[in-house]
Image (cartoon, rainbow, N blue to C red; front, side, top):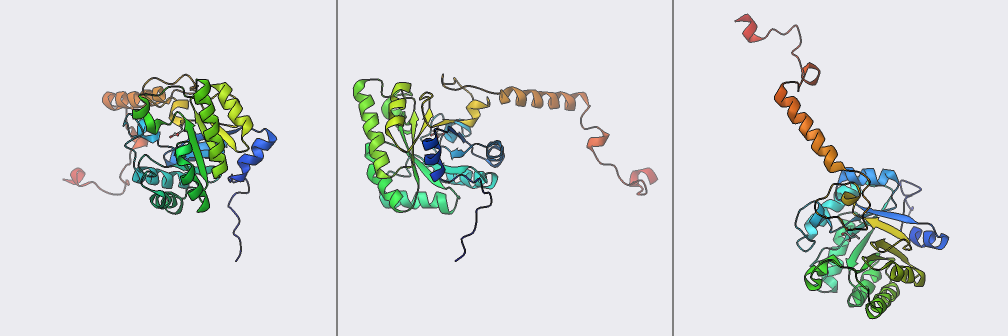
Length: 286
Ligand code: KIV
């Protein structure tokens, strides 16, 4: 059997993360949920694209991530796959897709990889997910874990607050991270945890930490694309640095077009089509 070469020599695969950590090189991860944003993010050089269940808040307007379905994630993964050729493509396991036993979890993860083209999956949870992570890794499914604030636990937690702020909970976080590494996860998202704790976890693990609201010491930084470009609604968490205001740009474009239509300046002759001169129009002859 010939081993087909990947299209791009610079394609990012899982081992690149460990190599970057060993060299002290920072990597970046952004979410994408559709073809155009995947292309833009991929072509900009972002190393990891996450089809996150944050899509529940960002593109579906659900208000949280709980209602997101396998079908919604799978459809987004397919579109993102078509737009991304270099970045490592990670698909989030939505709430309910990994709660009904290991076989069902493997089936759903395989669907994201085989049908969607994902190259790894992400799932939320600490020590309670260790067996599941082991099983997925045994089935050749690369796993990114996710601890700290786990938005799928919003009803249990009663909101979105910083996790691991006491010595006891910080210790639990560190233990969870080590157990997930031991189980075979290739990276761990640390969401909303004090920077000091994220720094300790990052130092103690050989796998990469992926920080969101977790300070500068994490190996990889991740943000929700729509927050970074100013295309989301509601109050932004303090860890978001907004680099553009796409909402404003879109509103201006839509308003200007509306004004042009209503004032009669759109469409002009160049923006419409004329009949060929030799064709006589019926109404001219009658
Ligand atoms: O769903 C998501 O986008 C995430 C990131 C914020 C890490 O889980």
